[in-house]
Amino acid sequence: MTEVLVLRNAHAIATLAGGTRRGAAQGDAAVLVREDDSLALAIVDGAIAAVGARDAVDRVLAGLGLDPADQPAVDVRGGLLTPGLVDAHTHLLFGGSRERELLLRQQGAGYLEILAAGGGILSSVDSTRAATAEALQDHGRRWLREMLSHGVTTAEVKTGYGLDLDTELRCLEVAGRLDREGPVELVPTYLGAHAVPRALRGRPDAADAHLDDIIANQLPRIAEQGIARFCDVFCELGVFDAAQSRRVLLAGRAHGLSPRLHADEIHDSLGAALAAELGAASADHLAAISPDGIEALGGAADAGMPVVATLLPATTLYLMSSHYAPARALIERGVPVALGTDFNPGTSPTPNLQLVLSLACLQLHLTPQEALVAATVNSARAVGLEGTHGTLETGRQADVVAWAVPSVEQLPTWLGADLVRTVVKRGRIVVGDAPATAG
Ligand code: IZC
Ligand code: ZN
Image 1 (tube, protein in one colour):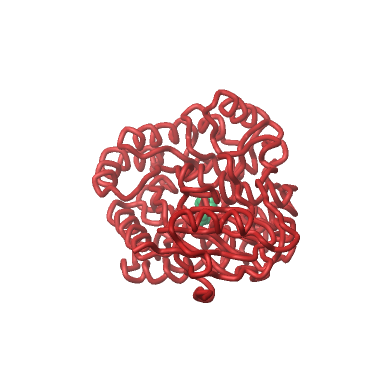
Image 2: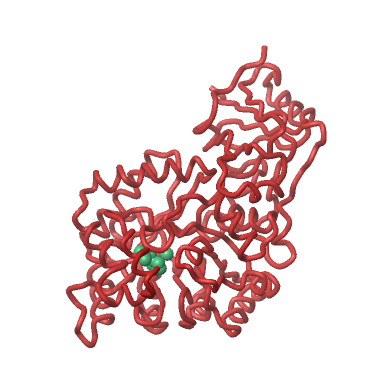
């Protein structure tokens, strides 16, 4: 039987029609507006069937043999419709918590200093190794609920708190289960090269020894398991350098995992240039990208092989740094910009991508439309889902959010407020009231 859902009485619909945006187009969310709140969106069998003026949408329904007056409908009361948000960078699955690091950093310790002393990522590795799959799944479900309540319908999710094969496989298994459970759809990334494990530290060749283990032992089994889609690496001074990062990303690619990377987060580590060289899906953080790095990403975009710059301003805020990624320079150089929460226990303990939209406006100086483009169509591209996710175009998967504000401009202004009224995933309401059927 045909399953129909109609969202009615929208003031504005940001359709994001037209694919990945860069340069001046980054600021075009393809917004429809009707002062009389007469916009509608119809969903048939999980896909978008029509978007636009009420009469035109009703005609499409009638053309499908469906009486428009008789379909399940939600009154969005003059709100804004956008695609479901896509969080392009999360470390969802971990055991324990790291509030002690906030105190250490308030006392002047640096993030990399805490890691070098065996804390930071390594303390999350200890608690994640000790966690059962069931505990990790319960924890993941709890935070996915929260992401969803802020409008996220798809999220990338990294491993990287196992570092050993067993725990990395366990976390991917949990990511696969949570994805099947829904409603938030997950894109799993293998990040075995997140840090050098404790057991190897002190050896002069520690980083290379870990990469040897990843390449010889872990990647073949991760690929065989078949859940991870991407391979990531923390390319950073004192963690893995660009040559080491290249090695692991090429090995990942040989096993069918597309490259993406943590690039130039704290120091310029030549990560952006490496991302451009490899044609990575995404180069993430970039708070310390050099002018050469910006040029490398600009050149890749000009050559038709854009690497998405996934910016994570909540991390900069939480690290109490004033050094935000040069988002305006990236946009001016024609690099497509996306956004993510970087949800993790140490440097960005926020699951709220709506708050990140606000930070993008306040700290990266994006316009509200640029920020919305970054968190929908461009973040869909950053996680390899361009073509199916991130826009409200006919035929697309029906992931839709109805917001309790009438415009894209208002979306980032109510800092930290709960603005989500209804969330639809694959055509079904997963947040908000059930539809009414007009008779
Ligand atoms: O657990 O500290 N940057 N990885 C690289 C992180 C931040 C997450 C963490
Ligand atoms: Zn990260």
